[in-house]
Length: 266
Image 1 (cartoon, one colour):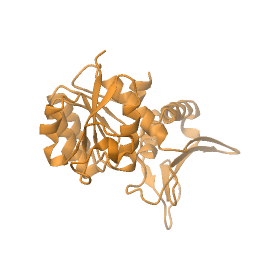
Image 2 (image 1 turned 180 degrees about the vertical axis):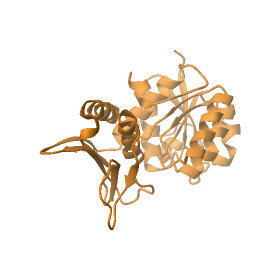
Image 3 (image 1 turned 30 degrees about the horizontal axis):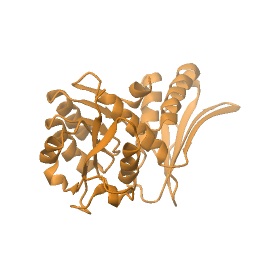
Image 4 (image 1 turned 90 degrees about the vertical axis):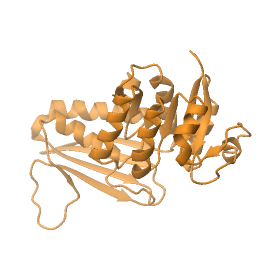
């Protein structure tokens, strides 16, 4: 297989720099372009502390032009919803495959990105969490819901660092949607306050504090017993590893389709 040329949006952020370093250390991959609002013109390798890569940081407004000139195969975006909603369709139009880990996208934004993937005949992996362990976590949630049925109440608690902008987390929502699907469709209730007797809803609760990377606990609560399925991320490296794996994988997949991290793992 030819070398995979990968670009980053938000390349100078914490996650972006980690992904740059990972791509640079991955056999068969190369950083082809980097985009950010800061450090424009600087070499992304020097920004990331790994030495010169001869790839200058570009302004996102030049996204389409730079992607085409750099012959980029795939772009990774772990920024914020408003930016991803603009940049993803532009990248698709440039014929570049997508890896999107941005959370907080609205249904309308998700649809626009999906439509751009199909219309421009590229492939995309869109996931709320790129951790390999979370892929297994989702499978366990589905299996528990399938076997426990409607006799157990379901509550989800997620905890993240105090800089996370959206709540509840995309991972918590994905877990809730998976369980709801298995149970025939359930209302999702985010937090509770005042008089609110429990029905058959799935409750989701968000904690924000310190430097928590990401904790997710799903509780299936019955009479006299409780089953908990839990995933804890100790470092953002777990997301980086999965994202780079997905980037290498997606370039050889059928075009005009959107995949999940489950597809990558399988």
